Length: 308
Length: 276
Image 1 (cartoon, rainbow over the protein chains, first blue to last red):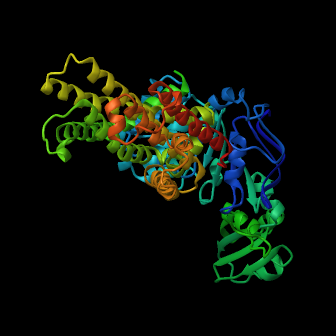
Image 2 (cartoon, rainbow over the protein chains, first blue to last red):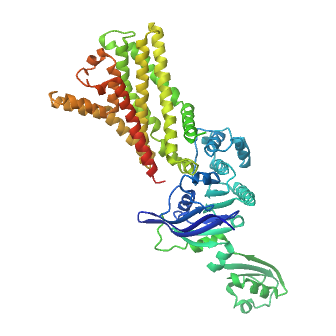
Image 3 (cartoon, rainbow over the protein chains, first blue to last red):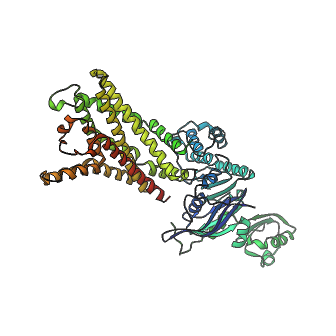
């Protein structure tokens, strides 16, 4: 896959403060990469580097094979959409006027604005002043703005912050459609539950360093996060403790009918075989490590880390 | 369409939407009509007074008001966008920082120019109709020159407000700097000059003192508008000051333009260095 975004050994220092240190990262065509990290981990700085708003102290940033900085970057900027983290837009203008303004700046026919407003679900409020918009509506307007000119690459900084669960789900459905059209997406977030399904790969930032990058499964394996297994059945005489002692990390026989245990991801199949060998078993539920747990694992408090 | 033009027209429309243009025009018009009617009340006359008196009183008041309005209009131009989150967004668009700043400046400049033109121009027409001077070239020349220099004065302080706006990281600080600029150029500077004259008992420095006045755009504006009237020169106590070629209206207008360009270039330079 040809990388749409490529960061090679990128660092950004402000004086003595290392905002980013030696980041290597790439996003392929039609890929959705989630950039996770606590506040001050370097998510926004990474985005600013890719956007060409700031220059790297060292290393190389490439967008579609080219540098995002300089005169020629105007062409790149037309095929790129960005949704900033906190944007309240111009409160005196209507949603439509704001979108027209940005369309003009991006040199895009304003006739596409109507369709975009519809797509983000703002048609009914297009002629109201942005000052009267809710946080969610502003976020939608921001999304419409980012989608101007069908960008090949979208950078979304905390896109679902302030959105209710329905709107969040709608938002990710929209991303799916965009991905199918070949749009690459880099999104940063600290709202984790439920986004696993929508992102292809995860990059975890902490204290300006890239802690790990890969699919959620790869990361779970590497982080040695346990899976949980819940089983139910009729087994008055079975001695589960002996049977499972070698495989399970933690084991709880809640009642005659219920069994809960945790185990390493790589012993999952063996566990299944042991459980299924017992004919009285009625139900097995496997809970894979969630992004939440993964995130918590990488962000275990380290005394040397400074939260900014 | 050119990016500077797009940004400028948005800024100008903002000025119309927020009624800046309307309210500044009204303030100027009321001021001009009021002064031309009551301008001579100090000498015991009420009624439309001579053109010289009107222009002199108008420029004295404009010196207080125009810088204040211009600073208020523009102090949050860049820092406001930053706090809204739109500055970062705009910089990811295919425009560069200089275009953004010059576009916004052009918009604000257009707001100032049209308010000055409508306000003072409207007043001039009204006064001309009432006093029957519609055909007086003298009136149109003086008012025309006054409007031109008043616009330049407004632009100067808009450009200064931009310097404040690109320097700071908080709106409140920009407002503070704007106020200090106003105090310095409108009140303190002249006080210092007067003070030094008094200390010297007017004995020396008449020459270089008048050149010192060129360092304050409000004084340049005053000189430019008074220079046109012989009567005004003695009236305003400026007869002994600024007799050189630099103090001809045309040259003074050029100096005003320099005063627009210098802070504007400074703000562009600072903005290009601003950390986003």
